[in-house]
Amino acid sequence: MKKVILKSVSLALVLLLMTSVFSACGSKTVERPVEAKIKTDIGDVRFTFKYGDLRDAGVSGDKLAPLFENTKKKTDDKTVTLSYYELVSTFGGEDYFDNMLALIPKEDFEKFSNNAERVLGYFNGLINNIKSGGNGDVRVSYREEFWINHGDGVVFMDTDGKELENQKELRAAFRLYADNSLKGIGSVLKNKEQADATEYGADLTNEMYLYGSKTASALTVSDLYTDKENKIYPAYTSLVPTLTFDLDSKGNNAEDENGEYIFVPTEWYRTINICVKPEEESVKKAFSMRNESEILKYFDAAKAYMTVNSYEVKFDPCYITAGINAVNDEMTYCTYQKNMTVTMNVTFTGALEKYGTMLITFPCTNQMTFDFGWKTAE
Image (cartoon, rainbow, N blue to C red; front, side, top):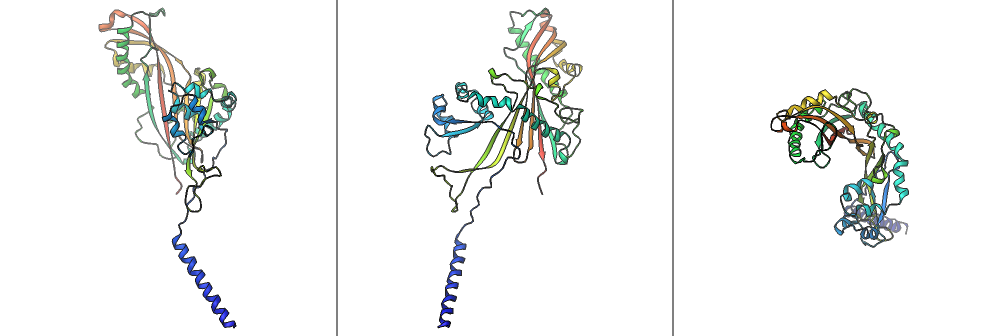
């Protein structure tokens, strides 16, 4: 009797093993997405909107659809969370943009100002670490642009500061002058020719703002500018996740108790926006300058019909925008937008000699973007 039992048990074990083997062969390992965690919490501000409120605010259907593309049932109470950067970049030029902003409680906007010191400290730490070499793990390249706005911001005056009436011919001449001069300006504004990135761990003293300094930013909160009426905030961040469908044990898209898909953030990307006061002492704490004689010689590109005798520069609010991998706090780029209003004392020559000497005031922008490459783990 004992012998029979052993045979039956052995047979059962064989069947069990065979079943598990065939089962393993037929199953598929489910690779569930790994959730990415933010390395540093600096109180990033994000705003939540309801589908119905956005529709009532005038947001067009073609703009609403992408916002709720992962929502199965688009009822009025469904929500979407957006950063301020996403709002401005996606809807900033739309007629209904102000209606969208009106949906945001004032206390949420206050977070921008309340968190400015924290954001600036985070930025200063990252950019100054890069300037010091980033422990040999970072290299730098740059892109530079300079442009003059030819629109209504250009004003022609006599030497006493009185605005001239007939400016059509002058505007045409100035546009040609500006376009010709840009070629010369572009070359002098570069610190040096740099087609490729620096080597990892290279000395960045003269490769990055602030040129000639071991520090990239000495900004403090007192150097920041705000204009709440025009929605300009001193220093704030926008955090955007890359979302991936969560998967159930069978490899299907997982759903919550309401039947909505569950998403997992697999990347976090942070954008920092900083607005600097239009005062030279503040601008110089983060932006490098060029001296007057260095620039003026390149305005000779249009000397056939006008000569620049001198010029003065007044700053408008200047902006710094930085992109950061929020999972490891590695900055990927930093753009400096130096906005200026220039007043030139100009003497016309040749065909325009009849206009003599006058003052021309115009807005212009010098934009420098530093791109950062980081060593990857081997």
